[in-house]
Image 1 (cartoon, rainbow, N blue to C red):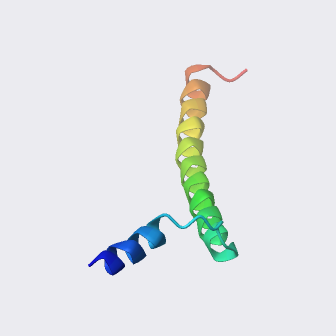
Image 2: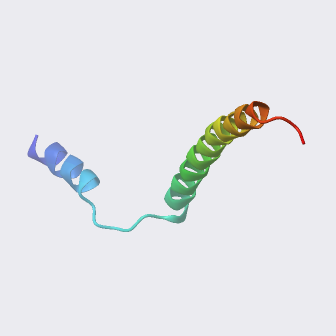
Amino acid sequence: MNFVMSKLRDLVWKEEGATSPEYAVMLALIIIVCIAAISYLGKKVNNTFNDMAQQYPDN
């Protein structure tokens, strides 16, 4: 039992740095979140500007 717990503890607490695939996955997740946020906010900002433009008469 101690052997299994020791191996699990080593797996969780290993002090090696992240490898390239791990960095690639983290970067992909960050990019996906950024694209989603920009898409959502872009639509909101566009709607706000359209609403403001409709309130003012054309010259």
